[in-house]
Amino acid sequence: MKSVTLKIEGMHCSGCAQNIKALVSSEAGVRGADVSFKDGQARILFDPQTVKEDQLVEVIKKAGYQVPAQDQ
Image (cartoon, rainbow, N blue to C red; front, side, top):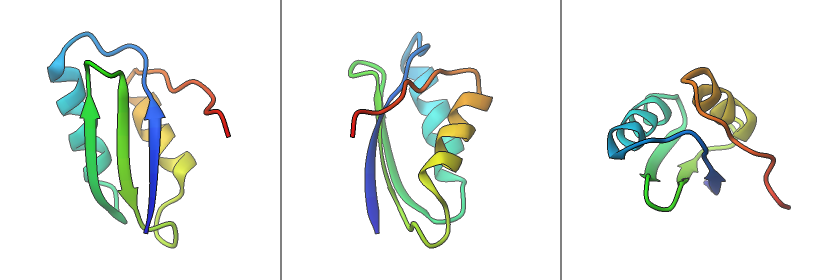
C-alpha cells in the first residue's frame, strides 16, 4: 500500500470534498480517501500495483479541480 497527500485547488465547499472522495474511492486499487475542504487536500491510500498516482490526479482534474505539481 502507498499513501499520498495531494493539494487540491478549486474546492468551494465540503460538498466538493465529498464529490472528490467519492470519485477517487471508486477507482480500483483505492483502499481509502480522506478529502478536506478546509485543508485543501486529499489523503489517499492505494495499491500502486493496481492504480498509479497520476491516474488519481487525472480523476480529480477531470472533475474540474486543479492538482498543482507536488513537492518531492
